[in-house]
Image (cartoon, rainbow, N blue to C red):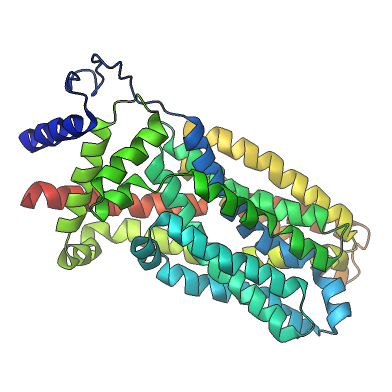
Length: 420
């Protein structure tokens, strides 16, 4: 394996014209030749631009989640919808997300990361335009379904693209920042939706998609996907674009190729091996976190928090703006602490916050129904929904993705060492 890697490195350097660069195992692949090659940088302007591009669609994801909360009363009034009909409008987003998530892996591998972003923007912008100009509930629901389909794919796509373009030293931080933009997108809807008409709000929500369409012209394709489809020259060009024109990308390119080869050797029989007894615990953890988080009512509070505030006797505008401010502060705090504390502690804290908030919200309506504490129940409900921010912007998506990747990656490494 070592000899093959050295040969691949020499071929790579030969194609780039860097004959005088020598790979040194002791310094991690850092070397300087006559042409002045430098070490790989953890951050470049193109890397930042690429991350911003991926973040646009996750911000739009948050916009779709937060849209129904501040617009419920106005949409129902303008279109003459019943509570049941608006509930269908709110929940159909989750149905679209299920469809998108089911095919997200196949789509991104078939078309590539960039092309998938192009395709998703058609569904994203089209969905918002359908909502903005609808005259009937059918078009309203189709637009919402289209947004859900986009969300199901983009949640996976953004994380995997950022993970594949960043270096190991900053990968976790970049990935979690992209994930937290979902919460900030919802916050944007909560604040702006309190002041503008629901049709105008739908048009404003197209901005992240339009911005991403523009930025897609300036970012590279994922190096790992290029290696997977055998486009080695484009792989090297993408790495140079991301790491800097004079960066030594030989070692990283070789690592990517070796990893892709191990994945190809990881047959369908090998994938089924993941379901062996030793992997039961991490797989159940992944499934449990996903299922229990959704069954905990997080979507209901995200979609209908405005109505919950009003029902509890709190102004919808005050409640939503405060909720948005709290989400922003906790999002920044979470992004700062994730590399220091780890995902598991933050997941435990956010899950506890979700449980506590749901309890307080239930208690407030219980007190209100029995007229036991009319003045205090709005306060309890207000605190309860705000505490639910811990669940709304928690790291469960990144955590479950990380666990899944870790399990599969370890299995691939064992398989490759055994068979290659």
